[in-house]
Image (cartoon, one colour):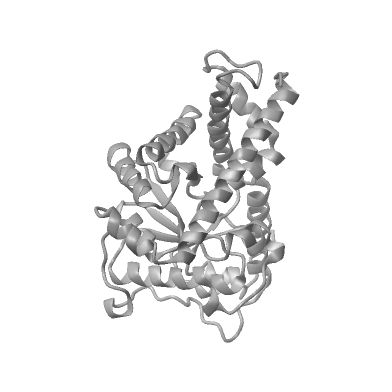
Amino acid sequence: MTKVPSGSVYDKVSQVSKISLDTMEQEHRDYFKNYYGIEFLNSTSNQAICFGNWVGHPEVVLEAISNVNKSFNDIPTSALDENFDDYVSEIIYQSIAITGRNQLTGIEGRILSQVLPSYAYKTEEVYKDAMRIINAYEKIGIDRSKLYIKIPVTWESMQAAKKLKAEENVDCLGTVVHSLEQAILAAEANCAIISPYIDDLEVNLDPSTYVRGPLEANYGYNETVRIHKYYKAHNVKTIICVAATIGVDVILGLSGVDEITVPVVALHKMLNFPVPSDVTVPNLKSSYSTEEAEKVETYIDDREKYYASLNSNPTAQKRIKFACDTFMSFDDKAHVLIKNILIEFKGLKH
């Protein structure tokens, strides 16, 4: 086993911020554990990550099909059957749970699974979708205490998050965070964690397009610094776990934040690049005065106030919409993938 290189970005940043894994691929988890001795705190997923996992691991979907077939009434024999979409949806929830179970065996903390972003503006649908995910995990023996349910932050979805914690003791993570308003709202909804996105999601989907730029021009970085200062100055207990990090500069710039979820490409960068001599780690302080942060706001009981403030930020609006649309496009791809697996392995008529 090779040790984490002393003085590397990973070495220094992991001493001041918890590191989680931005993938559900067991091979990647095992590589970093076996080669470097790294055990990650949590492991995250979303519709894009799950789709990628199922493409490479059709056995996950096949196990899910087997599980669903044990309890599904009137299993369809054709993609034209009236209940086919419901059948595929059940397979997807089971596949989410199996993927999470497989990854859970090699991490220290919890699995993060995401509700459908298409429900983000419908409180009851978010609540129901979260419980469907919880139930899928519990059917295969994974307790909800090992999960965080990821919910894209809208005013409506955070009403569901608050209810989920109060009524079902479900720990929620407010995701697709691109503004201080969302961060404040998620904390008021008793989210255990929030995930501000740093680098553009387009770059995270295709890291080959990443171009290093000045830190002060990085919208996600600047917004996260605002959130960090606000939380620390006003004693907000919700954990900040930054996401969508590709560049080493932003990871160094956010060192000292509670947690960073890192994709594989960025992990390799962190392990192979030393911290520059002119960079201080941590860069963020663990406490700030109220004078260093923005004033206390509240949005949880005032939908109009929340959207009036959020809608004044077109960059946040654009990024939120792009993320939700992107994840739903991968959900569409997952439905097609499962249909094709049913045709290939189960003789489904089409």
